[in-house]
Amino acid sequence: MSYREYDFQRKIDTCIDQLHQVLQANKTGIQLKSAENVSHRYEDKYLLVEQMTGLLGESVINTLGEMGLTTERLQVMLHWLAVEGEDVKLRFERTHLCRFVKETTREEESPRQLVEEKTGFLTQKTVLKSVTRITEYHYELEANYRLMAYKGHLFQEGQEEGERVAAGSMVLLERTALQNCVMRSKQFPFLNV
Image (cartoon, rainbow, N blue to C red; front, side, top):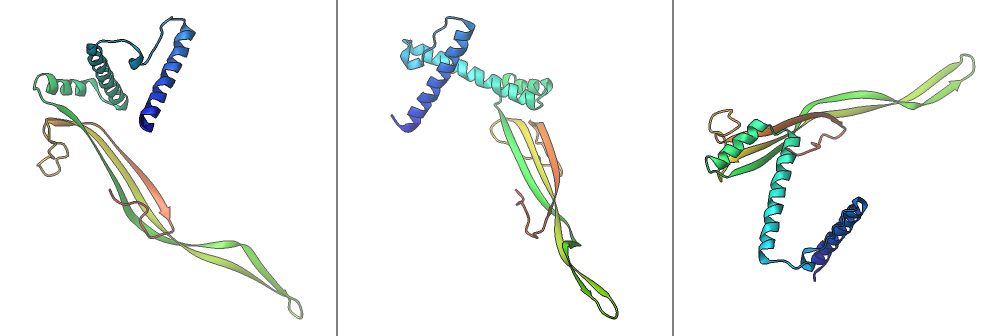
């Protein structure tokens, strides 16, 4: 048994132990065992795969719902699948942009001062201060992401000028975030991706 198989089996055993504790606390009397320790028919494996696939589908739909998927858009995707017989695929796009905005220079006095006093016929007091010239570079960082659903096997970009969504696809969610960044280096803080 490889380390990965051992680690996977250990995680399953840990989950079963935790489920036993929950079930014992609720006094259900259900005994849980891992699949290799239970006698079963060959067809039971297919049933297990079918149930797990259904569970995966439900969890994806719930996650998309929490992210903002509306019922109307879900119905469009179901129409593509059930009526038109097309596969429905999801596409996640992201871009990060970093733009140089401006360069500023300012002066900042040091909190320390050197005071020199000369006494004599005329009392003279000299104050020396250190002034630092600081050059700052201002950047604007922009992060965009978009989750799209499209039917068919190949995603095709829109053909018209400025068209962001191709026919047979729709935007499920889209977000943009902007942040200003001030640095003392002229080098871009992030690459455009």
